[in-house]
Amino acid sequence: MLSENNFRECKAEGWTNDIPICKVVKCLPVTEPENGRIISSSIEPDEEYYFGQVVQFECNSGFKHEGHKEIFCLVNGHWSNEKPRCVEISCTSPEIRNGYSVSPKKIYKENEIFQYKCNQGFENSERGNATCTSSGWSPIPSCEEVTCNPPYIPNGVYSPERIKHRTEDEIRYECKSGFYPATRGNTAKCTRSGWIPPPRCSLKPCDFPEIKHGRLYYEERYRPYFPVPIGQRYTYECDNNFVSPSKSYWGYIYCTKEGWLPEVPCIRQCIFNYVEYGYYSRETRHLLHESVKVDCYPGYSLSNGQNTVTCTENGWSPPLKCIRINISCVNPPKV
Image (cartoon, rainbow, N blue to C red):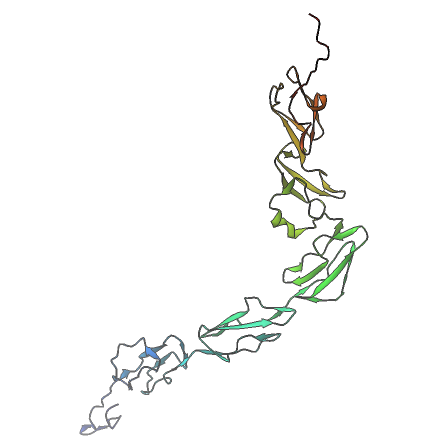
């Protein structure tokens, strides 16, 4: 209402007062907040706003709103709220139940990392850190109790016995007579994944196999896991001139209650393919302790007058070679 009077009276001479004039309500201009800006207004700076118009604000990166993000021009010419403040995003070092901070700072800015550790018996679900965001810490730092059920060890006993075991708690177990720990050592630790390694007692396990004239495939990879339980199987290979019981250069070795089988994984193999000053037909392979008859040329014989050779770990014995026979004539025939 721009007029002084907001009424008119009907009298004999007519209406009193001038016709009242009404003008739309306006609100005072709004300036951008420090470290922020106006994002929803087409009004030029220093211009007034009309009733019903809305102004929205946005803070710069690294700052957050303190107050309302938007304000309205009301019927009384006042704004619905004060314009917001843009304050720097920061997080205070949190108190962690059952844990402690490993970062020295007390105040963190946006995107800075807070690192912490949990007390023994407690673990965090993430990686032991949290990030400062406009909504606070993400994820919220926490340490949860992680427990393991009392272990069940057939043919074995353990100590100490507790109703509840927390992470990092360790037990030591002993196996009954005739049984042995299924893994190296006789201790196990409580982890988020359970007891590691699983405490078990089995029949006598097998130590790392020392294969004469051979070796396990990838033996350096497997060696840390010995001893191993009964039933375990590994692939092995033999040196040159040695073969497995199946006469192949490789085979399988098995852990049994009697120990490793086969007992002799690599057997010497001798090849009969050439005889110096003797006869042969085709290549023939013979295993350790096997003997072969040798036919020498006339006037030749094996050493010591033998006519057979035997396969030994060092090869053929005697050597696979025919030598000339020395013949002496004492009394020449009469002519």
